[in-house]
Image 1: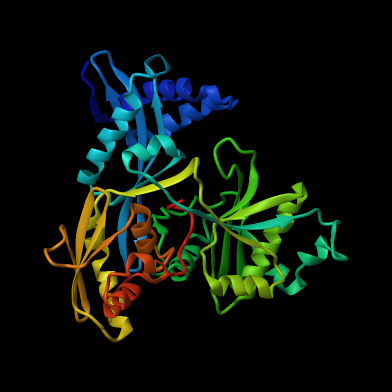
Image 2 (image 1 turned 135 degrees about the horizontal axis):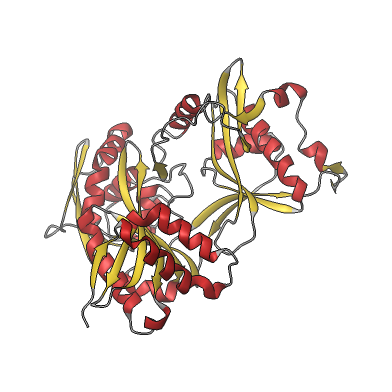
Length: 420
């Protein structure tokens, strides 16, 4: 029996909801039927359906995410809600669906893809384990003590700072917060590029978990909070899912986070998980505010986050202007020539000339070649790690070639979240 893959249409909404419910009800989530219906109604246009002569038998949702890399962007396919009708499971339909998606997505402009799941299963389609990053705050009840200091005191603010924190107005603050986010994340790799849309209607009630820090009518800090599961199936916890500040007002970070942590303390003891950028300047600010936190990088080996490159040459071409800007900012180019990058099933060339970098689709004969993994090249592109942190991959390169790579791919204060 033959199968074909197609994009979903609105008529598929009942089928998407049904397949999702039937496939995932085994996990015992009490609201799975309502959740499946909501996903179908709100996101049907992102689904791919696999069908045979009888009708749809499997499905997967692919969300397009545009990720910032300096002044450039790359396009990621976020794959989820992969489901097969229960009565058709065991026929290899899920594998066939994933194989076809990996074949189709590069032609639709995607440079890389991410998903979460059983690594043994998804490795066969080219995915590799990829880290997740969080900043976490452990919070105790306000009347508890830590080395003789009550948590109410630890999270206390001066009246002046407290007066500057208020709930975010989804209508009146929309433009100002958008500008603050743009300034704070300008050039930050790993940041999701998304339209903030239009302001909410005037009079829309504020969300008490989303806060701003305002000085003389100007917003200098922003924190978007949430109460929900960090990962599917987990109990709800307090989270910070977006954050920005004007570094001319460093106290904004202290005021916003302490205010939010005091709210979380109503259900303490608890752990507050934050999607803060990995930025030493920010961490120093939090230390100065006497906030204790853990910087976590989770690396799953069984079930977790995975990524792979879909179009290596296309991804490098997309970020070539940013790589050129880094070379220009360095003020020198210690080596000119071509360097080959080779990962499983893909290869490409970086052409380095004075202050310009371009990319080609294939390794040129005679060029030095770096053999790396999908995960490694994505860490370089997203600034999670610098090329210089992988000396074992560059032992065969000349010193000037290694220096050029360290200029093009440094460790940077990357955002967290969209890639993990």
